[in-house]
Length: 380
Image 1 (cartoon, rainbow, N blue to C red):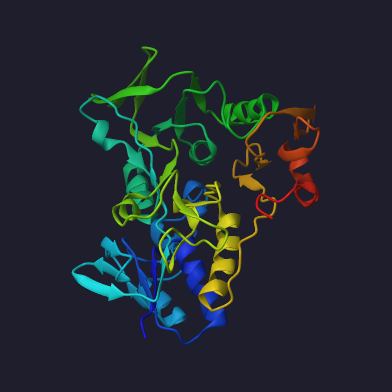
Image 2: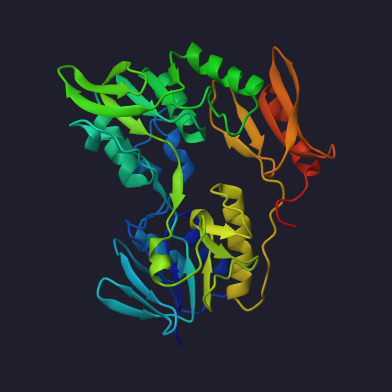
Protein backbone atom coordinates (compact mmCIF):
# COMPACT_ATOMS: atom_id res chain seq x y z
CA UNK A 1 0.00 0.00 0.00
CA UNK A 2 1.30 3.46 -0.88
CA UNK A 3 2.37 5.69 2.02
CA UNK A 4 1.19 9.06 3.18
CA UNK A 5 3.89 11.50 2.09
CA UNK A 6 4.52 14.78 3.89
CA UNK A 7 6.72 17.34 2.14
CA UNK A 8 8.20 19.62 4.79
CA UNK A 9 9.65 18.99 8.25
CA UNK A 10 8.78 22.24 9.98
CA UNK A 11 6.19 22.60 12.71
CA UNK A 12 3.33 21.97 10.27
CA UNK A 13 4.76 18.83 8.70
CA UNK A 14 5.96 17.18 11.87
CA UNK A 15 2.83 18.10 13.84
CA UNK A 16 0.62 16.44 11.22
CA UNK A 17 2.82 13.36 11.46
CA UNK A 18 2.66 13.29 15.25
CA UNK A 19 -1.11 13.81 15.33
CA UNK A 20 -1.57 11.11 12.71
CA UNK A 21 0.44 8.63 14.73
CA UNK A 22 -1.90 9.17 17.70
CA UNK A 23 -4.72 7.91 15.47
CA UNK A 24 -2.92 5.48 13.16
CA UNK A 25 0.27 3.74 14.18
CA UNK A 26 0.57 1.47 11.15
CA UNK A 27 0.11 3.36 7.86
CA UNK A 28 3.41 3.87 6.06
CA UNK A 29 4.65 7.45 6.39
CA UNK A 30 7.37 9.32 4.51
CA UNK A 31 8.61 12.81 5.39
CA UNK A 32 10.65 14.62 2.73
CA UNK A 33 12.66 17.64 3.90
CA UNK A 34 14.81 20.09 1.97
CA UNK A 35 16.88 20.74 5.12
CA UNK A 36 18.43 18.53 7.81
CA UNK A 37 14.94 17.59 9.08
CA UNK A 38 15.66 18.18 12.75
CA UNK A 39 12.71 19.25 14.87
CA UNK A 40 12.79 22.66 16.50
CA UNK A 41 10.56 25.60 17.38
CA UNK A 42 10.94 28.18 14.61
CA UNK A 43 9.50 31.05 16.72
CA UNK A 44 12.51 30.66 19.02
CA UNK A 45 14.87 31.88 16.30
CA UNK A 46 14.07 35.55 16.91
CA UNK A 47 14.86 35.47 20.64
CA UNK A 48 17.35 32.63 21.00
CA UNK A 49 20.34 34.98 21.25
CA UNK A 50 19.23 36.42 24.56
CA UNK A 51 18.65 32.92 25.86
CA UNK A 52 22.21 32.02 24.88
CA UNK A 53 21.13 29.22 22.56
CA UNK A 54 23.11 28.06 19.57
CA UNK A 55 21.48 26.44 16.55
CA UNK A 56 22.41 23.02 17.89
CA UNK A 57 20.79 23.81 21.23
CA UNK A 58 17.53 24.89 19.60
CA UNK A 59 17.06 21.55 17.86
CA UNK A 60 15.04 19.12 19.97
CA UNK A 61 15.51 16.00 17.84
CA UNK A 62 17.53 14.89 14.83
CA UNK A 63 16.05 13.45 11.64
CA UNK A 64 16.96 9.95 12.79
CA UNK A 65 15.28 10.50 16.14
CA UNK A 66 12.15 11.86 14.44
CA UNK A 67 12.06 8.85 12.12
CA UNK A 68 12.14 6.55 15.14
CA UNK A 69 9.53 8.53 17.08
CA UNK A 70 7.15 8.62 14.12
CA UNK A 71 7.82 5.16 12.73
CA UNK A 72 8.46 6.96 9.46
CA UNK A 73 10.99 7.22 6.69
CA UNK A 74 12.53 10.69 6.92
CA UNK A 75 14.46 11.91 3.87
CA UNK A 76 16.66 14.81 4.98
CA UNK A 77 18.35 17.31 2.65
CA UNK A 78 16.13 16.07 -0.17
CA UNK A 79 14.62 18.54 -2.62
CA UNK A 80 11.35 17.69 -4.35
CA UNK A 81 11.71 18.41 -8.05
CA UNK A 82 8.18 17.67 -9.22
CA UNK A 83 4.78 16.35 -8.20
CA UNK A 84 2.68 14.23 -10.54
CA UNK A 85 -0.82 14.59 -9.11
CA UNK A 86 -2.37 12.31 -11.76
CA UNK A 87 0.06 9.51 -11.08
CA UNK A 88 0.22 10.20 -7.33
CA UNK A 89 4.03 10.42 -7.40
CA UNK A 90 6.56 12.77 -5.82
CA UNK A 91 9.90 13.03 -7.63
CA UNK A 92 12.75 13.75 -5.22
CA UNK A 93 16.51 13.21 -5.50
CA UNK A 94 16.11 10.81 -8.39
CA UNK A 95 13.48 8.73 -6.63
CA UNK A 96 9.83 8.39 -7.59
CA UNK A 97 7.84 8.14 -4.35
CA UNK A 98 4.27 7.00 -4.82
CA UNK A 99 1.67 8.29 -2.39
CA UNK A 100 -1.86 7.52 -1.29
CA UNK A 101 -2.21 10.97 0.25
CA UNK A 102 0.17 13.92 -0.07
CA UNK A 103 0.56 16.68 2.51
CA UNK A 104 2.29 19.90 1.48
CA UNK A 105 3.87 21.70 4.42
CA UNK A 106 6.31 23.69 2.33
CA UNK A 107 6.57 26.77 4.53
CA UNK A 108 7.47 30.23 3.27
CA UNK A 109 10.51 32.06 1.94
CA UNK A 110 11.85 35.38 3.25
CA UNK A 111 11.06 38.34 1.02
CA UNK A 112 14.20 39.94 -0.37
CA UNK A 113 14.53 43.59 -1.34
CA UNK A 114 16.50 44.37 -4.50
CA UNK A 115 19.57 46.34 -3.44
CA UNK A 116 22.66 47.73 -5.07
CA UNK A 117 26.19 47.60 -3.69
CA UNK A 118 29.07 45.14 -3.62
CA UNK A 119 27.86 43.66 -0.31
CA UNK A 120 24.18 43.24 -1.18
CA UNK A 121 24.77 39.49 -1.25
CA UNK A 122 25.93 39.58 2.38
CA UNK A 123 22.52 40.56 3.75
CA UNK A 124 21.43 37.76 6.09
CA UNK A 125 18.00 36.23 6.63
CA UNK A 126 16.94 33.89 9.43
CA UNK A 127 14.16 31.53 8.37
CA UNK A 128 15.50 28.20 9.62
CA UNK A 129 18.20 26.66 11.78
CA UNK A 130 20.86 26.98 9.10
CA UNK A 131 20.06 30.67 8.67
CA UNK A 132 20.25 31.19 12.42
CA UNK A 133 23.62 29.43 12.56
CA UNK A 134 24.98 31.73 9.84
CA UNK A 135 23.61 34.76 11.68
CA UNK A 136 25.19 33.74 14.99
CA UNK A 137 28.54 33.17 13.29
CA UNK A 138 28.33 36.55 11.54
CA UNK A 139 27.67 38.58 14.71
CA UNK A 140 30.32 36.81 16.77
CA UNK A 141 32.71 39.53 17.99
CA UNK A 142 30.71 42.27 16.20
CA UNK A 143 28.73 45.11 17.75
CA UNK A 144 26.56 46.83 15.11
CA UNK A 145 23.55 45.34 13.33
CA UNK A 146 21.40 47.05 10.71
CA UNK A 147 17.97 45.45 10.72
CA UNK A 148 15.62 45.73 7.74
CA UNK A 149 12.01 45.57 8.89
CA UNK A 150 10.09 46.76 11.95
CA UNK A 151 7.32 44.17 11.84
CA UNK A 152 6.78 41.36 14.32
CA UNK A 153 9.99 39.42 13.60
CA UNK A 154 12.04 42.56 13.14
CA UNK A 155 10.98 43.95 16.51
CA UNK A 156 11.66 40.63 18.22
CA UNK A 157 15.17 40.52 16.77
CA UNK A 158 15.72 44.19 17.67
CA UNK A 159 14.76 43.54 21.30
CA UNK A 160 16.91 40.40 21.48
CA UNK A 161 19.97 42.01 19.92
CA UNK A 162 19.75 45.26 21.89
CA UNK A 163 19.28 43.40 25.18
CA UNK A 164 22.41 41.39 24.34
CA UNK A 165 24.39 44.62 23.98
CA UNK A 166 24.39 45.11 20.20
CA UNK A 167 23.87 48.47 18.59
CA UNK A 168 20.74 48.07 16.48
CA UNK A 169 19.52 50.35 13.68
CA UNK A 170 16.08 49.45 12.29
CA UNK A 171 14.94 50.60 8.84
CA UNK A 172 11.30 50.44 7.76
CA UNK A 173 9.13 52.37 5.27
CA UNK A 174 6.26 52.57 7.78
CA UNK A 175 5.99 55.50 10.23
CA UNK A 176 6.22 53.25 13.31
CA UNK A 177 6.97 49.66 14.38
CA UNK A 178 4.35 46.91 14.11
CA UNK A 179 2.26 49.25 11.98
CA UNK A 180 0.22 46.42 10.45
CA UNK A 181 -0.65 44.92 13.83
CA UNK A 182 -0.97 47.71 16.38
CA UNK A 183 -2.79 51.06 16.47
CA UNK A 184 -0.57 54.12 16.78
CA UNK A 185 -0.71 54.55 20.57
CA UNK A 186 0.23 50.91 21.19
CA UNK A 187 2.97 50.94 18.52
CA UNK A 188 4.51 54.04 20.07
CA UNK A 189 4.83 52.25 23.42
CA UNK A 190 6.84 49.52 21.71
CA UNK A 191 8.96 52.08 19.87
CA UNK A 192 9.79 53.98 23.04
CA UNK A 193 10.57 50.84 25.02
CA UNK A 194 12.98 49.53 22.41
CA UNK A 195 14.55 52.96 22.12
CA UNK A 196 15.29 52.76 25.84
CA UNK A 197 17.36 49.63 25.09
CA UNK A 198 19.35 51.59 22.52
CA UNK A 199 17.48 50.73 19.31
CA UNK A 200 17.63 53.50 16.72
CA UNK A 201 14.78 53.80 14.23
CA UNK A 202 14.81 54.97 10.61
CA UNK A 203 11.18 55.17 9.54
CA UNK A 204 9.72 56.28 6.23
CA UNK A 205 12.59 54.92 4.18
CA UNK A 206 14.19 51.73 2.89
CA UNK A 207 17.69 50.38 2.34
CA UNK A 208 18.78 50.90 -1.26
CA UNK A 209 22.40 49.66 -1.16
CA UNK A 210 24.83 47.72 1.00
CA UNK A 211 28.52 48.22 0.32
CA UNK A 212 31.76 47.19 1.94
CA UNK A 213 33.41 49.94 3.97
CA UNK A 214 36.70 50.21 5.90
CA UNK A 215 34.86 49.67 9.19
CA UNK A 216 32.51 46.94 7.96
CA UNK A 217 29.40 47.63 5.87
CA UNK A 218 27.70 50.82 4.80
CA UNK A 219 23.92 50.75 4.31
CA UNK A 220 22.64 53.56 2.13
CA UNK A 221 19.03 54.53 2.67
CA UNK A 222 16.58 55.83 0.09
CA UNK A 223 16.46 59.17 1.96
CA UNK A 224 20.20 59.66 1.43
CA UNK A 225 21.34 58.71 4.93
CA UNK A 226 24.05 56.10 5.48
CA UNK A 227 24.39 53.64 8.36
CA UNK A 228 27.60 51.91 9.38
CA UNK A 229 27.12 48.29 10.45
CA UNK A 230 28.99 45.04 10.88
CA UNK A 231 26.04 42.83 9.90
CA UNK A 232 22.82 43.48 7.96
CA UNK A 233 19.80 41.32 8.79
CA UNK A 234 16.63 41.37 6.71
CA UNK A 235 13.30 40.58 8.39
CA UNK A 236 10.75 42.17 6.08
CA UNK A 237 8.29 39.32 5.79
CA UNK A 238 7.60 35.93 4.26
CA UNK A 239 6.04 34.71 1.03
CA UNK A 240 4.36 31.27 0.85
CA UNK A 241 6.33 28.70 -1.16
CA UNK A 242 4.12 27.96 -4.14
CA UNK A 243 6.41 27.47 -7.14
CA UNK A 244 6.49 23.68 -6.85
CA UNK A 245 2.71 23.50 -6.70
CA UNK A 246 2.27 25.96 -9.55
CA UNK A 247 4.36 23.65 -11.72
CA UNK A 248 2.20 20.74 -10.59
CA UNK A 249 -0.92 22.56 -11.75
CA UNK A 250 -2.47 23.21 -8.33
CA UNK A 251 -4.54 26.34 -7.82
CA UNK A 252 -2.52 29.08 -6.12
CA UNK A 253 -3.29 32.65 -5.07
CA UNK A 254 -1.37 34.18 -2.17
CA UNK A 255 -0.79 30.60 -1.00
CA UNK A 256 -1.80 27.11 -2.07
CA UNK A 257 -5.59 27.26 -2.17
CA UNK A 258 -7.45 24.82 0.07
CA UNK A 259 -10.94 24.30 1.42
CA UNK A 260 -11.71 23.81 5.11
CA UNK A 261 -10.60 20.19 4.89
CA UNK A 262 -7.23 21.54 3.70
CA UNK A 263 -7.85 19.78 0.38
CA UNK A 264 -6.13 21.45 -2.57
CA UNK A 265 -7.42 21.51 -6.13
CA UNK A 266 -5.79 18.10 -6.72
CA UNK A 267 -7.26 14.84 -5.46
CA UNK A 268 -5.58 13.43 -2.33
CA UNK A 269 -3.31 16.47 -1.97
CA UNK A 270 -3.55 18.66 1.13
CA UNK A 271 -1.71 21.78 2.32
CA UNK A 272 -1.27 23.55 5.64
CA UNK A 273 0.98 25.99 7.43
CA UNK A 274 2.74 29.01 6.00
CA UNK A 275 2.31 27.83 2.40
CA UNK A 276 -1.47 27.40 2.55
CA UNK A 277 -4.37 29.76 1.90
CA UNK A 278 -7.37 28.31 3.71
CA UNK A 279 -10.62 29.86 2.47
CA UNK A 280 -8.84 33.15 1.87
CA UNK A 281 -6.75 33.13 5.07
CA UNK A 282 -2.94 32.98 5.10
CA UNK A 283 -2.00 32.66 8.79
CA UNK A 284 1.75 32.13 9.34
CA UNK A 285 1.48 31.63 13.09
CA UNK A 286 1.77 28.70 15.49
CA UNK A 287 -1.84 28.33 16.64
CA UNK A 288 -3.38 28.08 13.15
CA UNK A 289 -0.82 25.40 12.32
CA UNK A 290 -1.75 23.38 15.40
CA UNK A 291 -5.48 23.56 14.68
CA UNK A 292 -4.93 22.65 11.02
CA UNK A 293 -2.61 19.74 11.84
CA UNK A 294 -5.06 18.16 14.27
CA UNK A 295 -7.94 18.42 11.80
CA UNK A 296 -5.89 17.11 8.89
CA UNK A 297 -4.59 14.14 10.89
CA UNK A 298 -8.18 13.04 11.49
CA UNK A 299 -8.94 13.38 7.78
CA UNK A 300 -5.86 11.34 6.85
CA UNK A 301 -6.87 8.69 9.37
CA UNK A 302 -10.24 8.28 7.70
CA UNK A 303 -12.50 10.77 9.48
CA UNK A 304 -12.95 13.85 7.24
CA UNK A 305 -12.63 16.86 9.54
CA UNK A 306 -12.96 20.53 8.64
CA UNK A 307 -10.55 22.90 10.32
CA UNK A 308 -11.91 25.54 12.67
CA UNK A 309 -9.93 28.59 13.66
CA UNK A 310 -11.00 30.29 16.88
CA UNK A 311 -9.66 33.71 17.76
CA UNK A 312 -5.91 33.15 18.01
CA UNK A 313 -3.96 35.95 19.72
CA UNK A 314 -0.37 36.40 18.57
CA UNK A 315 2.24 37.13 21.22
CA UNK A 316 4.98 39.55 20.19
CA UNK A 317 8.16 38.53 22.01
CA UNK A 318 9.43 41.99 22.97
CA UNK A 319 10.16 41.78 26.73
CA UNK A 320 10.97 45.50 26.81
CA UNK A 321 7.27 46.09 26.07
CA UNK A 322 5.19 42.91 25.75
CA UNK A 323 2.45 42.98 23.13
CA UNK A 324 -0.41 40.71 22.09
CA UNK A 325 -2.57 41.15 19.02
CA UNK A 326 -5.66 39.39 17.73
CA UNK A 327 -5.70 40.73 14.16
CA UNK A 328 -9.14 41.89 13.05
CA UNK A 329 -10.56 40.71 9.72
CA UNK A 330 -10.10 42.86 6.66
CA UNK A 331 -12.70 45.56 6.26
CA UNK A 332 -13.61 49.00 7.59
CA UNK A 333 -13.43 49.62 11.31
CA UNK A 334 -11.83 51.71 14.03
CA UNK A 335 -9.66 51.15 17.08
CA UNK A 336 -11.13 52.12 20.47
CA UNK A 337 -8.13 52.73 22.72
CA UNK A 338 -7.78 52.96 26.49
CA UNK A 339 -4.30 53.63 27.84
CA UNK A 340 -2.51 54.50 31.05
CA UNK A 341 1.08 54.45 32.23
CA UNK A 342 1.01 50.66 32.63
CA UNK A 343 -0.29 49.66 29.23
CA UNK A 344 -2.64 50.01 26.27
CA UNK A 345 -5.85 48.12 25.50
CA UNK A 346 -7.23 48.63 21.98
CA UNK A 347 -10.44 47.00 20.71
CA UNK A 348 -11.24 46.95 17.02
CA UNK A 349 -14.85 47.73 16.17
CA UNK A 350 -16.38 47.16 12.75
CA UNK A 351 -18.98 49.48 11.21
CA UNK A 352 -21.75 47.71 13.14
CA UNK A 353 -19.95 48.28 16.44
CA UNK A 354 -18.95 44.64 16.87
CA UNK A 355 -15.55 43.93 18.43
CA UNK A 356 -13.58 41.71 16.06
CA UNK A 357 -9.97 42.14 17.17
CA UNK A 358 -7.74 43.58 19.85
CA UNK A 359 -4.23 44.78 20.61
CA UNK A 360 -2.70 44.78 24.07
CA UNK A 361 0.57 46.31 25.24
CA UNK A 362 2.30 46.23 28.61
CA UNK A 363 0.20 45.32 31.64
CA UNK A 364 -2.91 45.08 29.44
CA UNK A 365 -1.54 41.78 28.05
CA UNK A 366 -3.07 40.13 31.12
CA UNK A 367 -6.44 40.54 29.40
CA UNK A 368 -5.46 38.28 26.50
CA UNK A 369 -7.40 35.16 27.44
CA UNK A 370 -10.55 36.95 28.54
CA UNK A 371 -10.72 38.98 25.34
CA UNK A 372 -9.90 36.01 23.11
CA UNK A 373 -12.92 34.14 24.45
CA UNK A 374 -15.15 37.02 23.41
CA UNK A 375 -13.82 37.22 19.84
CA UNK A 376 -15.65 35.69 16.85
CA UNK A 377 -13.89 32.71 15.21
CA UNK A 378 -11.65 33.31 12.21
CA UNK A 379 -13.19 30.25 10.54
CA UNK A 380 -16.03 28.66 12.50
